[in-house]
Image (cartoon, rainbow, N blue to C red; front, side, top):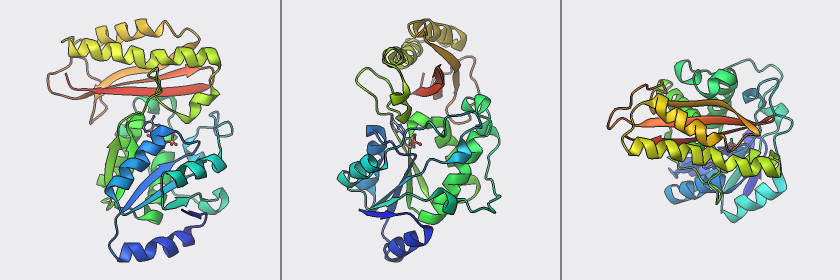
Length: 283
Ligand code: AMP
């Protein structure tokens, strides 16, 4: 695996394979890797000649009071994991060189950035779309791999790619979970033992909602009420949001319609640590 820190090095390494028409699969991450990230790598390995992963904790996507400085990091371990997963190129840009002192551009998309996580993180998605635009320009991949755990991020990026005619195919990879159902996340290490135990109820609550939908309940008010009942088993946390929205537009749905796919999404705080999870269901 080649480890690159500078943008010029990327062109040197990827220029030749690109000219030869080799396909490039790209997995952008913020590091502190777990099996969710590695699942993206495995999908990329299957479908491409070359796999590029990036590790960059992007300050633009953190709000002023958010956990940029607390965000877990372990580049040595991450490098080993990516080597074992047979990633070809790891790009870990240096912050000061990535955003030069005169950097002043922002890429943002309107509608899809506003609901769900956009309510409590109003600047988050502009940070994401800006960094992903830069990374896509640098790596020029054939396919981009994103996890369903950040489903809104996937919708926002897919819309940006469509709106701006970016020549890359987006692939959505299912959520990888711990044995008790908690969605794997780099932030899970920030939880206390008690919080970690209670965090399993985030997924259990969503499963309760899914069960109701599958058994024919179409009133999203009633579904959300039942989901919140399960969350009472996680009293040391607090709900940021629970929404049932159209899976494409992210617009809230009041009454479910047979055949139209919805996203049931949640963000839940344990002290300062904010966890997200979701389930896609077609009633
Ligand atoms: P992050 O490092 O948290 O920015 O995540 C990098 C990529 O990994 C994003 O596309 C995430 O959606 C994806 N990802 C994170 N956690 C999981 C998970 N548990 N299962 C699947 N994909 C994930």
